[in-house]
Length: 445
Image 1 (tube, rainbow, N blue to C red):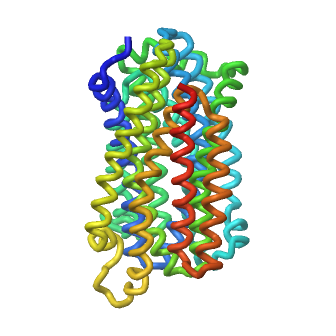
Image 2: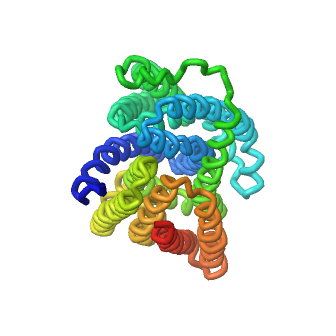
Image 3: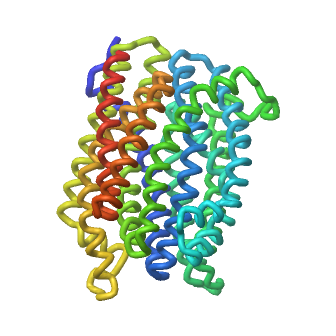
């Protein structure tokens, strides 16, 4: 039977609220980092922001692959196949380890790529000190994403929220203490922010492992038994579905990363202004991202029961919820722009006047574009619940890179719109992606 919309919405919120809260809490670390970087100076803000988005882009790409665990677990849970859940979870952890190693090696040599993209020598040197430490947090971050997908697919999203909030609070406190040298610790600047993040990432991963081992229902799945065994057929399934998700994540975050590098080519002030807008949007966007995870799980669970009317309803509930939330946030950003910008820099200071002038038009464009961005993210989550990942990957490439990056480059560099043009171009790509994803979900149902 198809549940009522009210029932589906309630079940959706049971997953979406803790998952979105966890995403917001996790992004709050980057938000706090950006504020502390801003207090350490514009140069530190530019370099630290560049390093952080580089690390985040690679983490999101690899994380997208392991998130492919989610529809498998949700489908197995909906079908009542406990053994399948065990097998998928174990191979997901193997996948996390195998992905972490090459990404860490790439990060260790990222300074060469930064210089080739025209970044200033001082910016590269500062960014490298941050990345050299952060790369050791890659495996626990991926393993945590795998286990988060497993327990969420089993409708146990609340502990994820609690663990992430705890890790975030610890991280923010560590940022302050190590970044500014409080409580007798030396002033480490960017290196201090990285060390605090490392400890937090390992703490969250180990906390979730302990929770799974101690929880009465979850420990019955024996997720860590025979962990040394690599099951190639299941591993290949995860890669087959998860790799396109990872590529899609790379295309989306890669767009923002390349745009950030292009902002750096326009100057330190443009890059600093961009970082303010981007970090604000990232924090807000974590809510529809959490909604996307919840949509994937709900669609996957109904798909496991072969209830396709409920699949369709679950997808549209997720999409609509994302639109409503982001519309409210867009209005808030448009009404209170000065207050938002004031979180990062002193808007009354004369030395920040040029940055403030650059931030305002970028923030307006970003606020409006995020409504459509929520549509494309929740709609893609619905498609992932159906294990439809390869076509969305191709759509992401065409819309984000062929349309978004090309139009942004032309508007920013050839039509003289600078950073505002780059934001406008990538927003056009996101808008087209939103429409195509919704159309595909409609056609598949």
